[in-house]
Length: 277
Ligand SMILES: [Fe+2]
Image (cartoon, rainbow, N blue to C red; front, side, top):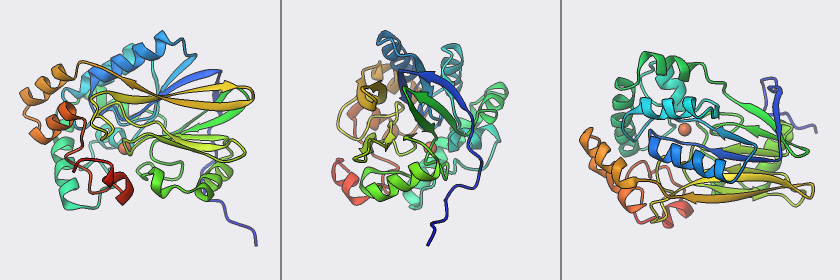
């Protein structure tokens, strides 16, 4: 029996070719981390830098992250947050199901929407929803949550090899790069294809470290190889700004400790067990 593809939309054109790319997602208004990550990637001499969506949420002064991405010339695709803020929707469409997650997500969203300029919202609304690039000889499909849904959570523990293969088949990609969950991981099949969740730079990866993470991907010996890179930034300044803006102390605590205190009911059991709360 022939399997039906999960893909309904036509694939976007391939827009660039590179040997090394830096991929990052989930800025969550952490404009200091955005600037630190782009500087780190440039120091390493990558050919291209891509942002996989969710400019706002959680942190202070959302326009500063939009300004950073635009000023630094980072190629960007749209996350669920960008679609919501860009079109002044009622909530972030983050995909949470627990009331506590939704409570904090709404506080964050209302602040972000109220503090994003008209020009910033127009820029968010106009972002493309996916992109395809060549890295070495391989096609990489860039998306936010998953190629099939902007707010799908692709966690390591819930994305088995069979599912990785189906996504790569249906989206005709060697590698699918995504974000949205905030925790980085990669799963490669024996043939080299795979899914790489590049993590988020807006808040720590629930690992007790204050650094944030992005992914480097490079073509080498006919393969694609990714490396996750921790980046230090001025988290004390960010924490001060968050407090001054009246953002919840729980959000600030995550920045100062490296442990998630909110929006963690969505975590699958295995990912939840590796955090503190
Ligand atoms: Fe997202």
